[in-house]
Image (cartoon, rainbow, N blue to C red; front, side):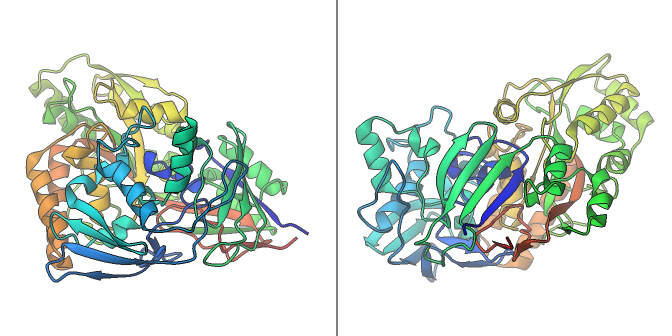
Length: 510
């Protein structure tokens, strides 16, 4: 009898070509199911282990990584594609060069393609070229040493797609299907997507790491947290994402459920648009940091499942600077700073996400509290929201009007991943939603990136956090505890510190 697991997901995927996107909900439905990467993260950790690359060696100068590729790996056979060859070096070059080379014909195959993660962590300046040594050996030649390259290649943008499939789509005039009807080498094969309703996957019986124990995997999309938990308790799904904190005690009391939890490598923030007056003035940004009562947000929104953020990195990440003082809640000083900046009767928009995220269970409630706090210092805030995909797209626009509530979970546990993605100059228009390009910080991040000495990198990242706190492009709001309720019928599920939901090793009792 076929085994089916239903996962109640919190939002619709934006697409299925993982390198095009940066939201965990999209990655759960693409890179974590359909694809593999050259390197992978060991389940439940941030340790890098071999994936489609069996092994690798590093040159003495740290600027060449030679990877031996796994042989005998099969791409999925679908209704639209039957592969004629196994995975090889051509697929690696295709997967990365379309992101690296702006002249590559696949670089703009989707009109809005920005390769946000690849560019946000400056892979284009790190990689000089990728060389095919033979069918099962590739060499990454770097412009500078980068000790964190293996953990970067394990990120979602490194998901390997089939060049043979891409060529077939190109010949047929349907290149967009690389994002709509995906083909990978991963544990599950894409079956179909009913927009805003469900994504269906089938087990890959030829998976190189061993066929999954479940035959069918369904992502049932339910944007409302209460609805997801009702479905879980009714047995309509066996795993459900992101319960409202208020629901956690009743979930724990349910004898049919297991409730897993761990501190998240995450941050929720309010990002100004520093390119727009008056948020181009650091005094205004500092004033709003002081106006907002973050403890009140944690108490009301997280309800015991979070802590106030002082720095932009989570306390559980190496490189975290515990000496960053953070901004006190100080209404009078906030008013004084606004006066000194010559800002009176300011009207602004505060953007609230329409979906629960691991770092922010209820952005609308958080926005209401922020609105009330801003009113006390003479700022009138209007709360706005959009459908999730549109919200993400508009939030990245350098001409965006207003401050946006967003956040993120570290993708590989390395501070560079978060700091470069959120604050690097090359990430403006992408992950750098504050549109804040500060050259002293950029130079510091570059210096840390080329060092292989963790103690030296730690000092540089501690300094970087002090700079960011001083310049205040964000209001860091909170770090959450991530909670995952699931049926006791589900076996072998491992929580991912990087925020992914993976089902390749999961079993279910029928």
